[in-house]
Length: 395
Image 1 (cartoon, rainbow, N blue to C red):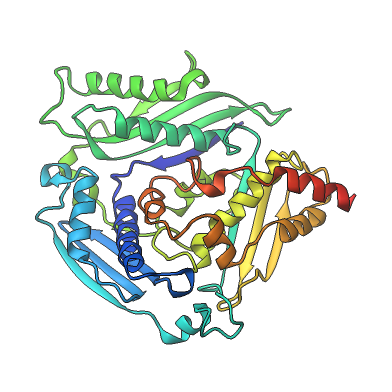
Image 2: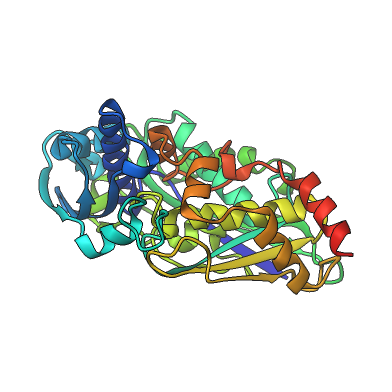
């Protein structure tokens, strides 16, 4: 049985769009903090970016007292991602930038401001359904294919080989044991990376493929073997000049499956885009809250696999529902574990913003790379003892 996960490099045009939106929100937060911002006066942002050939359109809704130079942020972000020449698909210095940001609807603002809200607390910035997932396949408590493919993407981003341009994507297929359901080995690896042939080595595609295989297999460690198949740039040639927005548009939120567990079976995707919203919008904060709860449940050995669904109503702080599915691996009935989640975790916007430090601009500057795995507050397993004690009380 093979299970595959997909991921992309930060230079993929969809990630470029995500990075631009997140960078604008980070800049707004920094400016608001200079003016004494608190959680009750935080800015409200919902941004969308479209990256086309040689330009970027930024739109969406923002409520803030701060002013930031959107064009400057767009250009700096694109340049920081390695796009400094149209020979690699995009040039942050000379690309066009269109700003179509408008103020947030006052009807939404009323529901999300503690001093104006119907319930006198920070309500959810929108209705929606969010999922969190965890399993015991890896130390990160994430599916192995998702962990491996993301490690491979980071390896290609940091390998320092000049002819690997910023744009790239890959897949890792892991073989699972039919009886135990646990991973055994990596069966197949696919890596597609734009190549800047101005710096390509002698030997052409074969030499480049050899270097790509080395980078990929080193990142996958002991999970590869002599039988692992490797495929690089299946069409034979992917020239950097036809990468990023020179060949494909980029849009915020278009890689949700990639960001949320890589398409692993059982790890569902709900809500909307995460990194382009301020954290009172539960598409953002509850995506982390659901993952945090699921990870702690698995870490507490209350289940080997855990999926959590949270639903919210706009303007209302507490979740409308909490649903847990442990796929038959729970030590308690799923309904009882759902009661634990509701009891142990504060899944209101205020609770998640405070606990996860979501008004830290550096969080926004890092999460487009990966929502999970890294040293984020929602990746901590610091509620294990409390969960175990509460589980004992439930019997």
